[in-house]
Image (cartoon, rainbow, N blue to C red; front, side, top):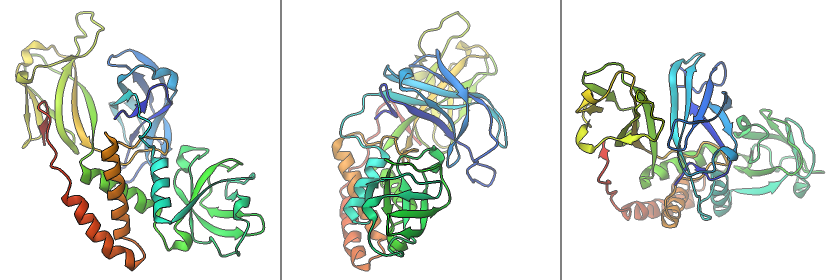
Length: 366
């Protein structure tokens, strides 16, 4: 399925980590350029900013994404703790089917099915550490303390994490939480889960969604652009860690004045070595130094980056299986012992019935 829906806003971002593998949340600089579809024509650009959880990029208005195809997001010069040149990725834009849910929708389904949380909307003006919902003006002061509150319409994308309820005013339904977020106004959707710390944490929901995606074998298209640095010398490209397959190599003739589409190399001109994890051009003498190449491949799908991101399911049947897998995996780690035994049996049944994935004829598995 596409990464972004036709005519809908999209957040283009890359994950940046420090040398210890921790997400970087400050200090990175650079300008991200969006190009496409299926061309090098620049559509928009902007200075990158932190989008939450180590993701750096820019919001892209839906008016730039009105044609289906492959687009690219590229940072020519990335500066800061992590630096580099031509750092970016490709993303697809296309039609999203009505049955395809966002991460927000999918989380809500799981929470409701498990009876672990309550979906609601704030009814009054809160603050950076409070949310007001008169629908919860009942109970006592300890009813929700220790629970997690997830704001599904964060004022800032960096606020999409869960916060912990530290106090509750049952007289007017005011939740006090930590850490602070962008001020919460009226009409903001949220979910209350992990009541008093006895349910599933948001991190567990996201982790099990990711595990279900990987077990189901859901894969997404990726691309990396490089430039030949020599002429008439064998060219090898090191396949990035995490790629599951290589699906093709394209080139762009930027020396003949052409500004057209990228051209796919014939399969007999490209060799993929899955042991050394390299792509080798078998006829490099056709290309001059400075020729741009685009290597395309597949990676196993990860949980969507943002609440508005679409869940990567290709068919309604695949989505149904994904939902069942995620529910079973969550119940296996249920805080309630009575849930766990039945869930283990159900998970074995589900995983045993998954068909073996068939590789497409134009891809080389790694």
